[in-house]
Amino acid sequence: KSGETGFPIVDAGMRQLRATGFMHNRVRMITASFLVKDLHLPWQRGARWFLEQLVDGDMASNQHGWQWCAGSGTDAAPYFRVFNPTTQGQKFDPTGDYIRRWVPELVDVDDPHLKKGQRPRGYPEPIVDHGQERTEALRRYQALTGK
Image (cartoon, rainbow, N blue to C red; front, side, top):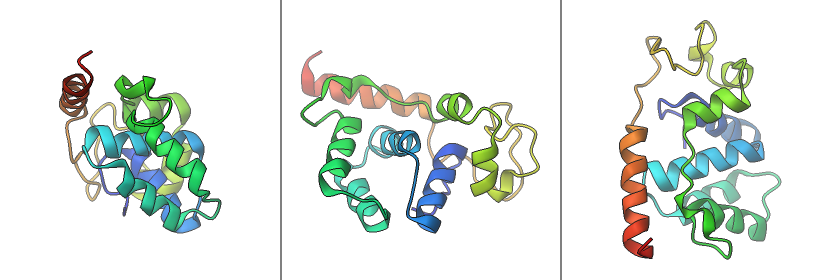
């Protein structure tokens, strides 16, 4: 909730949400994927927090978006989609301006996506290994679906 995951795009989104009550839809999908597929937490926890924070929160849209990201809604086909927060950040915030705006610890770094491993003092290490958690998420979904 406080934006201290060690993944810059996730942290920027969570900090923006807390400060303004808004988050761009792409960042909503990235953070939702992170919660359910990297942290293996129930989508309902994220949905509840977002509805408490969002100024544009709509129950139906919010719940459906979270279920889509979790792969458990009416359109569950993308259950196997696990957003990589680093590559998503690079693709949708290539200059790092969004990250730098919301994560002041990264204002002065050359690579705000931290792809090169340049992590400034005071900014947390990643709380999970995305590659390992992606593998685990897919293993769990496969166990449920048999696919």
